[in-house]
Image (cartoon, rainbow, N blue to C red; front, side):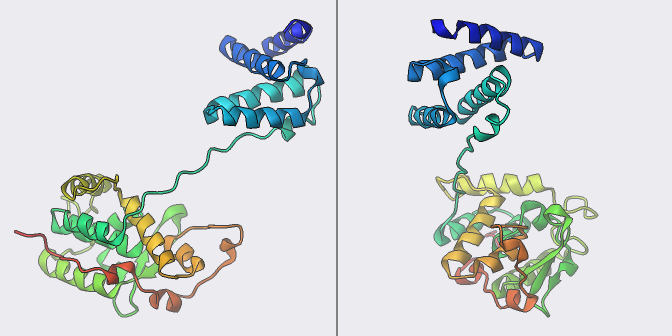
Amino acid sequence: MAEMSPLRRRMIEDMTVRNLSPATQRSYLYAVTKFSRYFSRSPDRLSVEDVRAFQVHLVSTGISWPALNQTVCALRFFYGVTLGQAEIPERIAYAREPRKLPVVLNADEVVRFLEAVASLKTRTALTTAYAAGLRVSEAAGLKVCDIDSGRMVIRVEHGKGGKDRYVMLSAQLLRILRTYWRLARPKHWLFPGRDESKPIDVQVLHSSCRSACAAADLAKRVTVHTLRHSFATHLLENGTDIRIIQVLLGHSSLSTTARYTRVSNALIRRTESPLDRLTLEVVPPA
């Protein structure tokens, strides 16, 4: 890259003035050199459109997202600092790694998983998490008084962002909870820990998930959040409006317009939980 030598020296000076580490300097120089060689032209003669074409080329080679964004950093520095074209860097976009699809259990897998949970308390807690789409901390933090059988809703206090919400109380879940209550007699916390003055530790639920997954011989990795993903997916597959699912999950925005959606508690109470479609044993075998 002979004709880049003056630019190279200038770029090194700019990076040194800004106290970039030697490793970062080498990385930036390598990225700009690679960019130049790809087009066989000095980089100061290449445009933003060339940068975008280079990004597409790098993606096609299978480059990792962190490495791609390191190249973006280098080119933004080169154009913005070394070439002094302050308007260019903002036009060179960082790459966003595609979000992976969540693991979702089908109905049979939900039954296999929940029936493989060994203890009454954790089985009931995980069943509640699936039936109402709760986060692990929300399921663990339920109080006996949060179960409102008169209105057929569950009050979830201090969900993500400190927000309270109501979710539907499945008719089958209510029967399961009543059986659990007769056997366990929880007083304040619906699922108390060893110290009954405190709720069950979320790590107990995580551990139960791992054990049940192995016992059920499921190939998928199952967590409490997997049950939440499955709840939402099963509702969507059964035709439930996405706006209702948004409210049930306690999401502030599933889309740019979802934040303006308001769904009444009456509509929540009329929404059937996917648990009602399953045949599930409540009490673990002796």
